[in-house]
Length: 78
Ligand SMILES: [Zn+2]
Figure (spheres, rainbow, N blue to C red):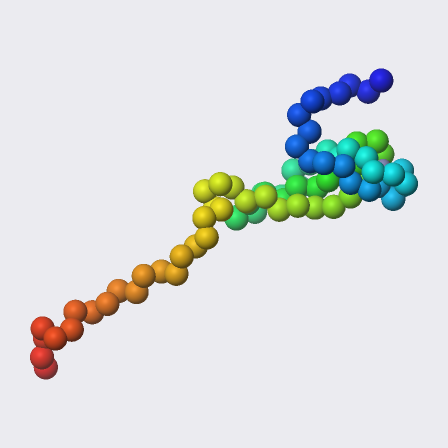
């Protein structure tokens, strides 16, 4: 029996090599400026089943448009 961990965060994905859905393992692939790119590997044959980009909680907030600096009007007259 392979060693089992109970904290799989990802669900199962269909593995074309195993010809059945298998639990996947996340592997950190890249660290991006806006998050991290994970690769899903079949836990049985380590075939790459897909990628997923995960953004940090701090980056999850949608970037609001920058407030435009408004020049005071009406006070200065040329
Ligand atoms: Zn597989």
